[in-house]
Length: 119
Image 1 (cartoon, rainbow, N blue to C red):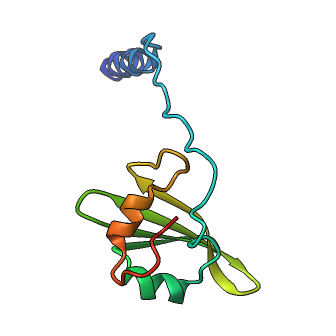
Image 2 (image 1 turned 180 degrees about the horizontal axis):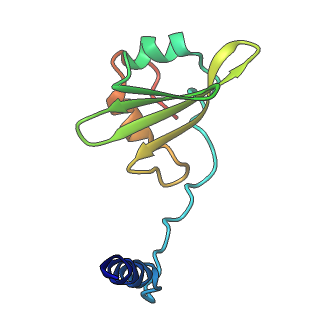
Image 3 (image 1 turned 135 degrees about the horizontal axis):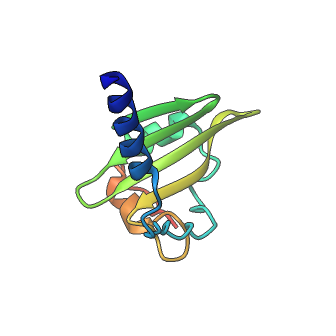
């Protein structure tokens, strides 16, 4: 009998946790489309030569995400396989850029070898 009471209490507690609170979580807006002109299409060796070793690498199937950490921002490079090997197909920064998902000031700050600024 005690087990039945405990089970009923547990079920009531779980159903209370699952009940809708009326609060809705809003997701952030999607980043603006577009890629930095002189980064999209670069291969892994070219990114390493410009930005150095990533702070973090994640493989998700055949896709790799490289993260670079700066003092004021983070850069995320999304590599996809193609005929030239692994190349950058998408770039994002936190904070985001105004025109596209990657902020050129952030990417320029992450560069280890200054050359042509990121457009």
